[in-house]
Amino acid sequence: MSKASWAGAKMTIHQLCYEAPPLFLLFQSYFNIKDFYVLEKAALDAGVTTEEYRQFICYVGAFYGNLSNYHSFGHSKFIPECSQDTFKKILKSNPAYDDNHQAFYKRIFEDLWP
Figure 1 (cartoon, rainbow, N blue to C red):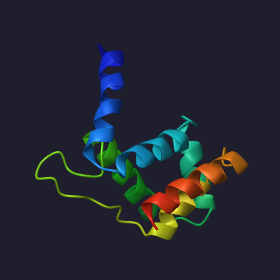
Figure 2 (figure 1 turned 90 degrees about the vertical axis):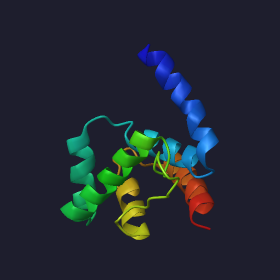
Figure 3 (figure 1 turned 180 degrees about the vertical axis):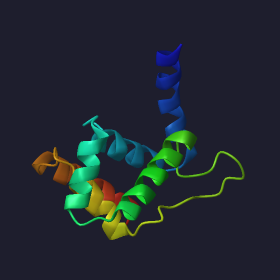
């Protein structure tokens, strides 16, 4: 049941808004390293504050909870509390970030923040 639910949830992402699929791919790529302490330490070492990282995690949690960057009620959009630069800095601090990720992130960043 859980596998079927997760497979079906991915279809929902494409039906909610144009930003949801690239954000989903971005977060799936970022959290591919499943050790959250490593990800947090890398972000803090890159100059992100603990509060900014918490804001990022809260945004990601809300995204996964709604399967979009819109609330499941009232169709109101939510955005990260941290700045766009901090958001990018956190994603690029991922220890697995390499040339492939750079091209992938750049394409998504251009779609989300023209």
